[in-house]
Each structure stands twice: as C-alpha cells, then as structure tokens.
Length: 244
Image (cartoon, rainbow, N blue to C red; front, side):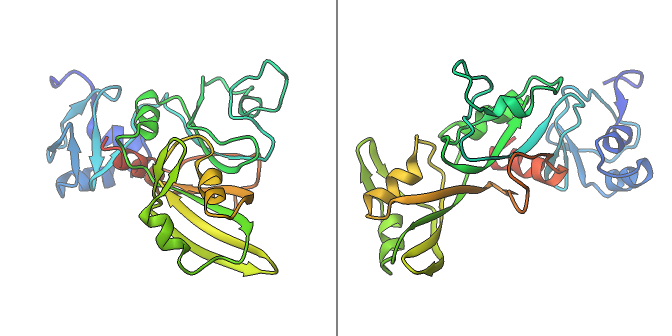
C-alpha cells in the first residue's frame, strides 16, 4: 500500500489486542510479524485490515472487527439448528438477541452435549468442517463396562460401519466403576452419530456423550447453555489447524 493508504501495522496489532502500539513496534522490529506471508520490520508499513493476513510468531491474528468466534456449551435436548419450525429448543434460541448473523460449525445431535463453535467467519467454518482438513475432536462417553484392554487397539486399527470404516485418533479409559465406564475418544470424522455408532458396534452403547474439545479449543468448566468469546490464541489455533 502507499504511504497514505491503509492503517499502520502497529495500530492494527494494538486494535486486535496483540499488544500496545509500543510493544507491537518491538514485535515488528524483532521480525516476529508477517503480512501476507512476508516478514515486516519497518514501522511505517500500512495494511488493509479487511484483507491483510497477519501472523505474529506464526499464529494468525484476527484483525477484522466484524468477525465473531464463540464457544457454546450445548445442553442435552437442544437441536443444532439456528431455527426450528417444530418449536423445539435449538442453538438459535441462545443467540437470538445478537446483532451478528451467526451459524454453527458442524453439528451435535440433540442428545449430545458439549462444545459447539458459532461464528460468522465463513472461510474458517468451511475449512473446519471440510473432510480434507484433519481437525481433531475429543469426546467423553459414558458406556456400559467393563472395557477390554484391547479395545483401544481395535478402534485405532479401524471398525467397519455400514457407511464405511472409521478409525480413532486417540482412545483411553478415564474412569470405571460399577458397570459404568468413562472413555475419551479423539477422532477427526464428521459423519452423523459417529461416536455413538462406533462404540455401539464394539459392544459398548453410549449412555451419555459430551464433546470437550475441538482442535485446541477446550470446553473446560463452561456451564451448559453459556457462550464465550474465543481468546486470540484459540482463534489462532483454529486458523493453524486448517492452514489459514
């Protein structure tokens, strides 16, 4: 851009919450900031905040002020739609009063609780749900026990379902007592009811299912039905996961 166009890079970084203008200048001087794939070291560089792709220490920085990235803890019984013509509880009920036109990234069935991402960032949402990008999702499932020691190996080797094979990226037993076993399942599959169908196929029907993590975004102790804005590092981790 010319010397009269755009916004100074250090101002853009400060407005994005990366650091103060003075600290942003230090980041630039240290060669830790890149714009559109090229390292920038001059303080006078101007950028277009609506189009520039800016990274700090290799992590993408969201500089567009109109983009929204939220984590929602979907309660059981809530349908993953933004509206429901049958009047059933749905995700849209929780963001009805927001001015942003949000949509959900992927789905959770009505009986499954846990982490769901909401955004108006179409490019990020498309990549997060596209099968060519291996975005890991973590679930906690309560199943009928006990669990055979070989089950993890079986799931990693692959299980044949009616719509094709599925393999998990991670599996471990978290807790087991009195015929109840809590297991953690990590996979990048996005087929409908994939965790429930997978565990039922190996003889352990799911009693309760919660999604706890997508890429590096964790549900943590966020209460059911609540929304929170993703932190800058969390949004950056999602961009990194889908090569943005």
